[in-house]
Amino acid sequence: MSPLPFDLVILDMKLRKMEETEVLAELRRHRAGVKAIMLTGYPTAESARLARQLGAVGYCVKPVDKEELEALVGAVLDSPGAEDGGAGAADRLCREARSWK
View 1 (cartoon, rainbow, N blue to C red):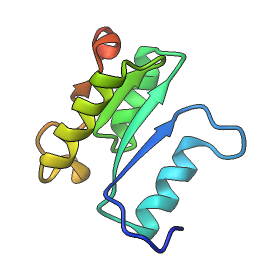
View 2: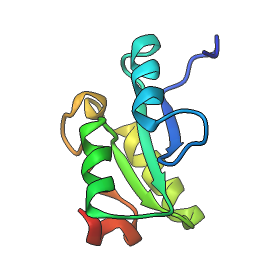
View 3: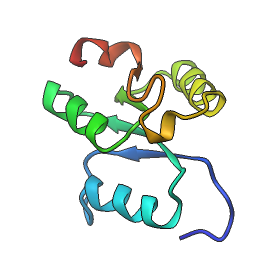
View 4: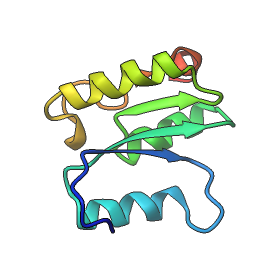
């Protein structure tokens, strides 16, 4: 884990060496308040639900539009309480992901 502080991670849902659940669990163990935006190239209703269950505060389908991701990052970082399932948790979707909610 990085010794530098961070407030947000952008995490691909399909990882080669670890399951996304393991990565988020490890992040939460070391940095309880960290927020996560999940990315996927394989959008399904199930992956959107999984992102929500894992506590993600954002969900985007790849390829992600740069401006849209920047706007999402800004909204997530400006929103208090989202990391613990508060207002807006996992309801911040990139345009392409809205149909998977």
